[in-house]
Amino acid sequence: MDFDTIMLEAEELMDRAVEHAIHEFSTLHTGKASPAMIENIHVHVESYGTNMALRELGAITTPDLHTLQVTPWDRGTSGAVEKAIRDANLGLNPISRGATIIIPIPELSGDRRKELVKMATLHAEEGRISVRQARHHAMDQLKKLKADGHVSEDDVKRHEKDVQDQTDSHVKRINDALDAKEKELLTV
View 1 (cartoon, one colour):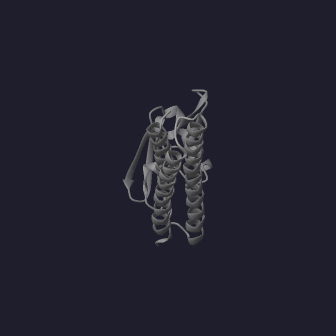
View 2: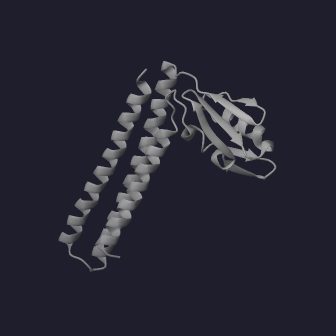
View 3: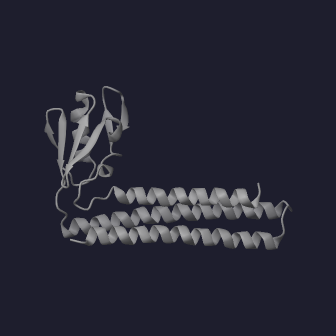
């Protein structure tokens, strides 16, 4: 392994951590309907004998700003989809209308907004932890190169600084995304 490979691998892992945190932020709703709010809810489908993400079971649309609509491809899964949405602890109460499930998105109370900010903070911390784990892995790889006698200590120190700079940059991206999400959630 060489310096470039170590740096590329670290950056790729850090980018994935940032992208995951930002995706998790998108699942926290602000009173506006978005398919991302429910697309990853796992639904236990008895007839299939497995758990599946909601996005795999039907079409999720937004007929207006305050409503989501799920149309399962298999009508037999409607009850399981409705139950999974209700049990997902998102504060949503789906209404079954034949083969279609309507999900009104309620206005957020002050307490619910604060609760969502706490959830966003937890998602951000998970992202920061993943970034730091990628840094730790890269630092270990650099130390291994030095221990094997392939590189000088000065080269390792310079690349350790590069890894730290990369870490700081990715953590800042997560923090900036968190700040934006908090503003979005707390703006009435």
